Length: 298
Image (cartoon, rainbow, N blue to C red):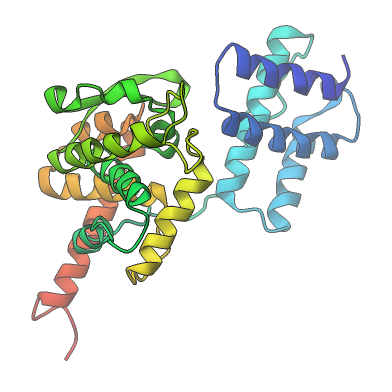
């Protein structure tokens, strides 16, 4: 098997057996393409650990961040581990190699007031699209959904949402979870369903559709949200994941229940959720700096 054929076989296994998303497969493909370039056609068993270290140092010197290197090495490590199970590869050359540490970037979240402004429904656009956008953005913020989870929702998923008060979504690695849906999001969804059933083409199962009546794309959601934020004069670029961050941050500020936030976000590890404790502390620190009489030097 050639080096490239091995890469293609691993990616096919990830897609068919582990059922990773197309976006994740695309990231792995890009990482392995870089490995192919560095290996320059040499057989995989010939790659040694010191070479991988040199390549990582070389990429870091070219400006690749520690965070990006960590993801790259994780992709390579997984590929070589699979090779070890399916071929005669004796040693994983990526074993024990760690990327340089990078400062942890906190996710950006909107304030409660900024979120309330964003969720106000404008009255100067196409009422069908405004109803759809209101339902999408309310659902993002009400339930902390990922963009992929929202786009995958079908009309049938919310058929009895007023009674259930929750919706089932399919998260990463096809893990299903049920999330609560607030009353304002429920009302926005009910308003949208009236418009949606007139707009969607026959047989289209998607909950959220575009002007042509087909399932809405990720790019379409991103553009509509950014345009709304600009129209309302919000001081930052707003993207769908920012509403998820805002949901988590505001919920944690109010409840202090990290485990509940973890469950609603669908994080497999509490470590992924703990970043919001830092975000919450940052908020408290800014309040202290602005309000406490001893916070600033006179």
